[in-house]
Image 1: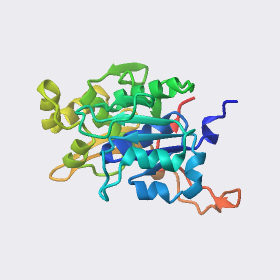
Image 2: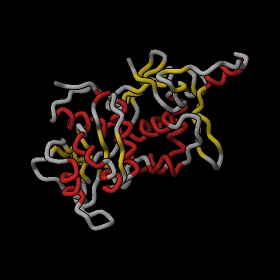
Image 3: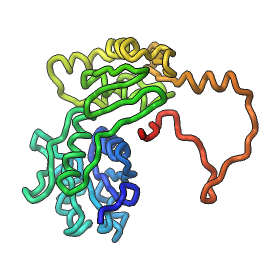
Image 4: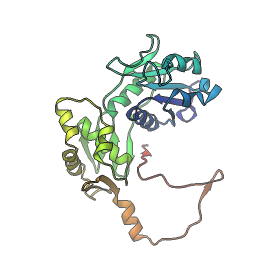
Length: 270
């Protein structure tokens, strides 16, 4: 019997920051709350619970870890023979390569491609999921199609622009510098996409114009000279100005105080 996403125990073992964040965001966007590990030792800390995972994604693993252990063999021994392993492998062929009987796909360049890969891998093991749709206020971002919807409009972005916009929404309210944005974009690009990554300032200007991020639909994209960029929710700012501060008792659910979601956390699309 198939269980709901909320009941599934999903793990991610990824060896690069970009792949870890891609996997975390991709799984959360389709309803999972994955356990994310950065090394074999972190995975092993689960003990016998590793064999109770419903699936484990392994991203860009090296053949041997820093202690000389064969990564894929150690993972399979830890989780046992029944846990499906989904492999996202380095396209260069320098990383660890799974056996032909394992479910695998080549590592992807942009977040939308990564989401498509996750959906395809889940399909192979019998799990069907709709493409994700992430919503921040008036803006709905669809990674697979790279479309941003707002105010009755639909704007299709190139891969670099979409991933930069997505990073700014995920980090809403934070100052994000060029180095951080570059780390979340694929390395070694060539041609037009390489030029886009090398000219992030120009991409920011285009996003501000094409997505109307000028305090028109609840969001303002700021440029902070020598610091970076910040996407600010102007709806929350206006609300604070217009509503007097009131001391309210905390609400409680299941014995814990509830707090509102962080500004950069999207609300699930319905």
